[in-house]
Image: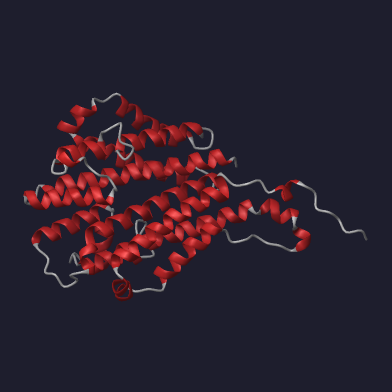
Length: 339
């Protein structure tokens, strides 16, 4: 597969996952704020912006409308939902022949709808319509990619982009919402805290799955354990690190095919790449840790280390598959030893 094709598939998946995540947390913040005091609602907006790594201009720090427009509807902000959808569609157009017609139809339909809307009016009157459409498209797109694409390199790069984006997003959410556990783990929660935690779980599509495992009792340590260490839930960090590891392993075996055939005489096999070593260390750390050990290390430190690992994996994948140097030994015939 051409490196530019792999790059476009990877970023298409990441941008659409980012758009869906931003739409989800924005939608939940608007709903949660209705049940909170003005000060608690403002704190919730600041946590949301922190998790999305977005900063408002100084004069707009207490303006929730400005925050909504910046991360939802501002076409000049690269972090906004509409910008992410446009970037995902741009990358999809570059690899139109690699994805199915149904996948293209979903993302193109959403882009055209956004392009034909008055975004200022939509942000004021009915922002929820954008959030619902983006979340629905993201879910349909993922389902269609799993149901209409062969499990080849293209599908693997899409899986990789989605899993890295999810792990980064959930890491940022946990750091933004539960940093206080490092300083005051026994603090008495308020009613507004429970509202916030329920919103966090719903924003991660995890509320029902959490309740089935832990009952409807919301406890911060159980929420952290579920979103950080659960190996079976699709939005949990450990689950996505496993997906990243498995996807990188599959890509390495496919990419190593030429070298293996070329160097068969020497008996050399596929090598573990830098990206897989990085995610393997992070995955092993979480797989063999429990919540008590993580709290002793410091939750903020652990989740930020996970995010740093995901960023390192991203750059390692870029070096290994996108902007890699040419291996001239593969292009030249192996010298034969005279009989």
